[in-house]
Image (cartoon, rainbow, N blue to C red):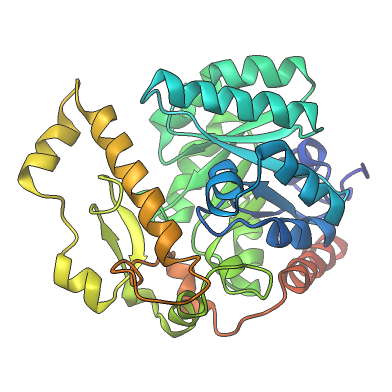
Length: 341
């Protein structure tokens, strides 16, 4: 692990120290797009790539440890693990615990948690000498995560793909900066200008997803990649019909035909204290199945869901399919130039 450059801001220095990587750049965990080759390419080039365990096992068919070892056969650089820890069921949480333990056994020491109380992850990972960053969208959740013991915050803003936040990047930074933890910008970065802009704003690192879907190493279908290239900022909309809570997707004829709101019964169940976790679990399991069929579809046949493509507003800045390692190296060179300047 090399020390961070002397001129980096404290948040960047902390992130580089926590992650052990060369550049303050994360390839975020993506279901179902986080295949081993994409993860290894970003890691080998000096970024931090995050393993999405359900992508690794359910989509790409690896036994979990076998999948981690496949990544290790492609790179010996650090990688991280994503854990969605909402307490929807005992069986689900036990699976997340197993993923965590097996990751620790395989040498992973950087974890990103989301959707639940990360205190149990922090306790175990800290015992093993690792660090935990947590997805947050506002100060309230940031404070809860800090109280639970996290080492840093993934700041999910209104420009992000997947489950986007409601604050713009600057407002979210100003809201979370007083908590004193390293802040990672998640959302709105598709090109070099946006990357350096977020670092200039004060973020310690940047997490990207949409930009890394449109790469040669990502095994998402060609229609999905082409949809990202064609999409403008105005083509990204939020829909409740995938997971029960708003998800950023590309506007397509299918999305327009089906609408973006969950039905009245579903909305009532999603807001009910007793039923909301079960409804989210139902939506999540359904979307896991449908995304597997539609996005990673080797035969490129229509499935009825092949126009539900997740993407953030950074899609408007993505105009070509490129090598994931080259993107990482290009952005990394800009970071190093900025530090030297």
